Image (cartoon, rainbow, N blue to C red):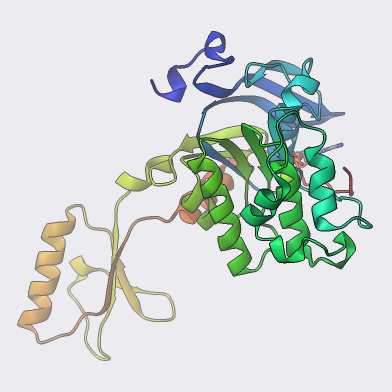
Length: 328
Ligand SMILES: Nc1ncnc2c1ncn2[C@@H]1O[C@H](COP(=O)(O)OP(=O)(O)OP(=O)(O)O)[C@@H](O)[C@H]1O
Ligand SMILES: [Mg+2]
């Protein structure tokens, strides 16, 4: 069964659905942050929400966490309504908020142990620290951690209760490249344990690497949904062939013309195989080398930018980002 085929009644203990959202709306005064979102996330899936600043990602995620009240629509998370059954839901979910802060006078392991204490079946503290790569910092005070290490601690706190479902709102913002890779490993480990992960990110490589499926939100609506490889027809989009020619040589018009300052020549063939055959045949016949020949399809970032550009044209000015305060 694909996640799209699932209905509200399918959600519940033992069900295949972790998150089901239908027609979700939320406004802050006259700011319509979420304007009718539908989402279905299967158990064991890693699902990423993408979208520009102010698109409504955090609002959506925080409603699913039970942290914010919705105005309208139906929401079920692990079979619970987060609006009415938040405390029951909390026992099975781990949360990394976009902005967060833990008490800085505690040590790393004291912090994780404290949060573990809130849960009926916590994961051993040492195991959690190992999972997030903070074992060596276990005795450090939180105030002495770097920004990236504090973010890892946020993830550790979310894992303390050994949750079934994790909400990670921009979990790797501020991470250096190797810390990001390690965080990806953490998410992969969780996925391998069969946990469900809902994350938001501004990094397309992160979504591509981690997510089974992604949804792009713009102006409070989902504008596209699919696997990272197929989003918005990426897999079937026409390919671009590009190459460079030696100085003074030009190709027949059917093989494109120079674009951009580098003098790279581009064209979009209808039939890639035939076009490449003709192009390389022409090159061989004329003793020309096709430097840096490249065949590319739109990247996830290309389709993301296209989707969010066209969606933002239709949005009112009110849908801008807010500044975020620290909170717990
Ligand atoms: N507490 C609030 N009070 C008033 N407006 C809010 C509040 N929280 C969010 N908004 C507004 O709702 C809209 C959606 O914000 P949200 O934080 O959900 O966006 P986001 O997609 O998470 O953005 P970002 O990528 O910047 O984190 C924005 O216009 C924002 O200014
Ligand atoms: Mg956000």
